[in-house]
Length: 312
Image (cartoon, rainbow, N blue to C red):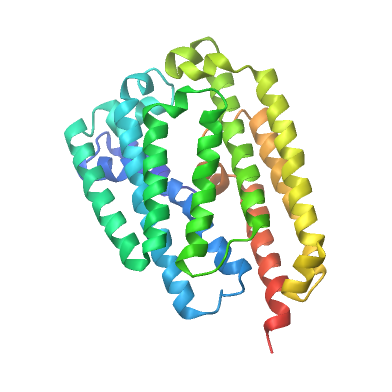
């Protein structure tokens, strides 16, 4: 499967030119919107997947985060445009390449931010508050937090946690502490793998593109990734086999999904270490068939196991 912006880039390369509208659309990074599907996680685990009002509210919440995440990407690309021009892949981004002006990017970001936050508060004021915190935190990350070692990766992980919290708030359920722990650990795993990919890909030029990479080393990142990998698998295993989970869902079979979690994480590690990928987690998910198949089968298995006791 090819991501939307990758397909658009292929068409542009074939024609030799890119329209302003297409360039702006690519700057929104539509392939990255897959991250916002995390908003639906509380819906699934709260056993509300077939409750139409909840589904509609979660869908609206996901759309809001798609808009706000695009705001963050536009701001980030404006701030990083000089450094991106030194990167072998990021130099193709429309703002870095000069296909989208800074004025247009800022105008689009302001419009999306206003529309996204207004929609968020219309859905629920608490959801709006979480969405606003997400936007402020990620903008702060683009401005300064990404230059602070360890805190840079942790901030990215917190962005995923806020998506999960927002998904719970918008359908008026309490987020599970298990979902919170598994989300932040899984997101931290992806963030650290992304840093490792950048460090290895850019080699001696890493610090000139992203100065914070000078604070890391492949060995340090490998140690961090190992700790987070083990923690993620342990947390997910404890969640699936805990008496609390069995009582909530009325089934003890959720542990059958553990092999999917193990394979998915190990496949990701393989792609990072052996294929030197991982720079764009969303693109990696969409383009690596084994990983996509694993995630798809995991979702199907979770839904079948969780919802079976509730189906007449």
